[in-house]
Image (tube, rainbow, N blue to C red; front, side):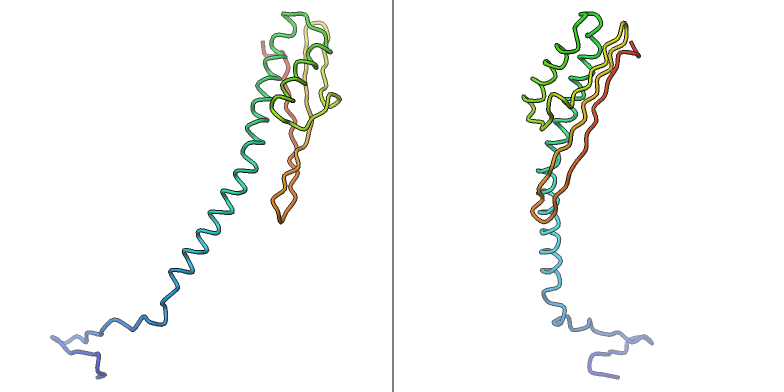
Length: 137
């Protein structure tokens, strides 16, 4: 039996192994975890506002489509209102990206735009296509 082994009641008890070689392993794991969390927060700060602005634009498009027939608004007025909302939200869409189909009892609105996101090491382009019509009313 070695120095660390003890014999007690028929079983050999061994002392805990020396852990001096594993020192710093938990620090390394902590640093890796903090780096990953930092990257996730950075990416979230860049991407979440873009999706939130798209959500708000989708709501505005649905509202315009819902009330366009009742107000009997021409396509250019609908386009103007949506352009104001787009500028208010800071969305990089142009007036020509707004498609309005206004026929008799049907109003269909589509906005197609893309948002470039600079993640320092990677350039990401998100494509959005908010769409609404008044068929469900």
